[in-house]
Amino acid sequence: MKVTIVGAGAVGASCAEYIAIKDFASEVVLLDIKEGYAEGKAMDLMQCASLNGFDTKITGVTNDYSKTAGSDIAVITSGIPRKPGMTREELIGINAGIVKSVAESLVAESPNVILIVVSNPMDTMTYLAHKAIDLPKNKIIGMGGALDSARFKYRLAEALEAPISDVDGMVIGGHSDVGMVPLTAHATRNSVKVSEFLSEERLNQVMEDTKVGGATLTKLLGTSAWYAPGAAVSALVQAIACDQKKMFPCSALLEGEFGLNDLCIGVPVILGRNGIEKIVEIELSEAEKTKLHTSAEGVKKTNGLLEL
Ligand SMILES: NC(=O)c1ccc[n+]([C@@H]2O[C@H](COP(=O)([O-])OP(=O)(O)OC[C@H]3O[C@@H](n4cnc5c(N)ncnc54)[C@H](O)[C@@H]3O)[C@@H](O)[C@H]2O)c1
Ligand SMILES: O=C(O)C[C@H](O)C(=O)O
Image 1 (spheres, rainbow, N blue to C red):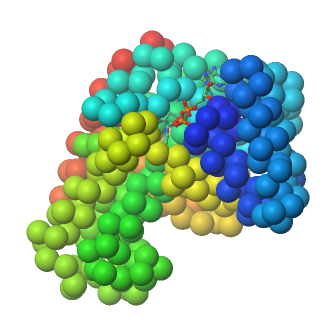
Image 2 (image 1 turned 120 degrees about the horizontal axis):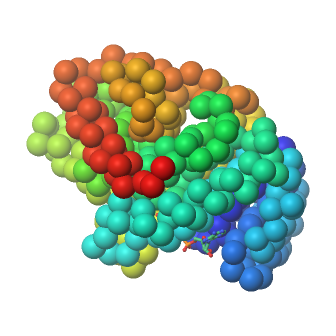
């Protein structure tokens, strides 16, 4: 199993580290445009191998796509992250050009690759990848909801004063400060609805804290987060590589599902060796449907800024 990660920055390197620690891939190639940077990150990570007990071979290359040839899965984390006070959507001007050229270069070397798009604004970058390259729709996946759901569970556990392993929940919708739809009515503690333990007011607070999860960290760190993003990407890569058939909210190209068309947005999907093996059309309340459709309008507005 060969995995390429383009962008050896904070998220790309974190993702490579988690993939290596889980030891399911034979090879991870890190590629960056900055001379020597991916080589340095790969060497540093390889020097963790004997300490952390993994055999995954990590190599780094400077912009040489021939070294990515035959990749089973490729992750795009290249592009700029936001600074405090910015929205993800403001990154489109620089990141669209980067994501398009990276996606084209990857597919030229690995025509059967499964692509995971991470660069922001992620839903729009995933849509751009669908437009720019000729891969079946199940093979282009945007990562956002897995991360947002992890943050949702963190906030739920905090409110419930419970261990995170007791908590389950999912965030669908666009990966943006306003567009996320945390499904509070579906969230549970050991299969009991969290609304049995938390007031509506507290649940609303959990929802709002979840939606600004990325912005909160960006303010604290001066740049956007990388540990949980890296862990979330590695979970998707593992689900595909190991054919786990796990359900995650991912940004998928919709063609009528949830009443939405011609955009990529976060919805529950089953991930396995073929990428998105199924879009799971869960039952949503009228209020949740309205939120999802409002979120979709926001994503479409950002998509409208693309030069397609
Ligand atoms: N979808 C999500 O949930 C999520 C989570 C975290 C970060 N992100 C996004 O991921 C992106 C990366 O974030 P980061 O913190 O790792 O940034 P970073 O600046 O640490 O790393 C980005 C790397 O991309 C490289 N790069 C730029 N142009 C390139 C090109 N054409 N080819 C190859 N490499 C190139 C840079 O040299 C840099 O090393 C940002 O757009 C950020 O907003 C998304
Ligand atoms: O917040 C960001 O800009 C990065 C990423 O999308 C995140 O949610 O951490």
